[in-house]
Image (cartoon, rainbow, N blue to C red; front, side, top):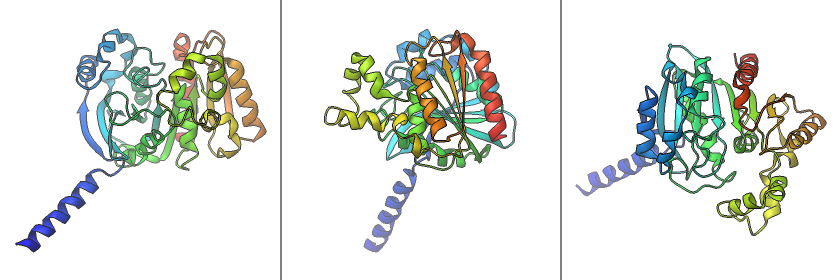
Length: 316
């Protein structure tokens, strides 16, 4: 009897360990339309009240693709995210999208998101499987926000998650990030060779410079970036890819989308970053939009044209 109990205990421990495998999906909830999305937000997110401000016109493609709200394991944390796929059976290139903002401001379901679920549905409708994380500590996820710290694991753990999806071809894997998500994308790119191409918009490439320009943001970051007030210079430079362009792979082409009227990321920051890319022979294409603000909402059709052309060239 005792022997059987020990065997059962070991089996249960093994089962628990397996169930928390990074990238394993804990829960999937189908979201068939905009109304179901609103209900999902109300049930899962602390800032659910902001869902009433979502612009339904941005969700024109939402019911034309399969959308799931997911919870997956990352460092033994239950992290929230979304999975979007074409409805038609088949094998499709996959893209990991990295959201902007910090904490619950700018989540994939927040009304101010430059790229939210509506835009991701449009991208999925173009023939891609999209996985996107809310990051730890955000959008109903467990854990604490770190803004370029261990939250990078939440992105890396989307790779095995996608590999387990029948429609996703992870041999054709791309990455897309906006604002903070561009920083996240570069930090991810340093840690894996799985990506074939990348696109970034409203790119955050030098937050040490941003901290000087915006003292309020500097104070905001001090609340949730680990060791921020101990060694701020090192913390900021670690999260600013302009300081380590030489470490980026020269085999992953980067599309950069920049609004000339971007009030969050001045165009000159992006131009300085582009010069570093050129200096270190990292392949890229910079597209500037004369009337574009940080979200590029004024030119969505134009930047989607660039995105489809870019990922179509390198992933299809």
